[in-house]
Image (tube, rainbow, N blue to C red; front, side, top):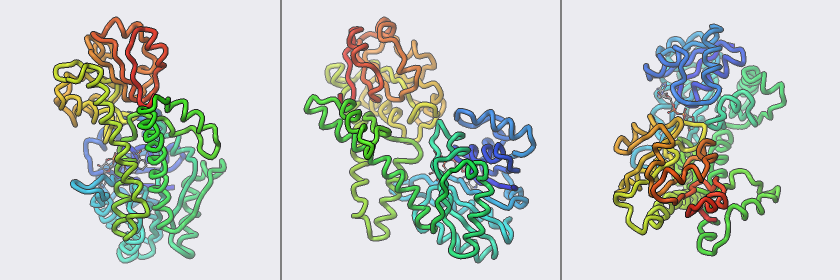
Length: 436
Ligand code: NAD
């Protein structure tokens, strides 16, 4: 099939390369010339395991190309729109200007019979609004909302073998036809038994934001338990293991720590709340404001623990930060708890030295005032406190005895509860986790 993908960021670049991997003829289009030049040269503009391989294979096969010219979308029959929907400056809502601009550029080249498929995470009601625009601009073209659930770090696998597919389609024959076309686009997954949920626009849009709201709530729930554990001497990791054995609860996404971040969960729950307020139903999901607050409180707690570890005054203390990305196997530092805590510690006067296997360059763009070190050893050397905030395997696997010989003070704050407290304490460390 002939496919265009508008917006080639974390979602779109993976989607474009995966579609080519699945046998389609794909053009990826973005307004960012530098990004398109990189992609066209076979270089992934960000770190995502497996992406470089399918990118190069797609380019070599001739089935994948990249462009900054929307006219190149004209040859495609199915167009995915995967541009960003960040939080607006000074508010909670999603900034829709990129989606609106992408649709207006795309519609100038779309034709009757085309399928326009929204993948961006949008406020409920967006698809209905855009469907009117599509109907009035290109009669006979159909809008579908097909939200994306990929996880950074597993994005290629999640795109090629998704847990489920959700199609938000219009009523009637056009919707039925659209679902059949999408089944063909995703034929390799559908034939393997991937569940397909066909719904109306509003349901499809809400599936995405409610899934993220649920995941954020699960994380903040266990972090709230960590706050209680901290004042009672309980161990939240054991608590999570114990409640997680209940199949109705489940152990996944129940890891207490410094909380969630990244380019999705924080801005998605805020945009959902903003949209609910617009709809006069703010109270229905008011708990999401609490979810957000619990999440942000964990960052302050790490700063507090670091301060306590050095006797109350961070000024001039050397803090070794292990991690900058919002999670391991990603270089994404958007709303990253690790980077936020690093900046808060620096604001408090600490001498912060941070490392990350992939995210240093992106962190440097947002926080040029911090000191970065590519070597883990150099980061640790002379540290008064070690703070682990992104659970990359190379950090989790550190030997507390060897690390002990590098630092000035054996104090570790395990912001992801991913180290073995007994092993670190045995090696002479003062160990502090979150809620344990
Ligand atoms: P991103 O910022 O990495 O990428 C967005 C891309 O869109 C950029 O390359 C930008 O240059 C491009 N763009 C902006 N305006 C454009 C226009 N008018 N025409 C063409 N291209 C344009 O963002 P992302 O992380 O890929 O997220 C994209 C969307 O997907 C968001 O709505 C996000 O919530 C959603 N999403 C992201 C993920 C994820 O893990 N990153 C997962 C699921 C859903």
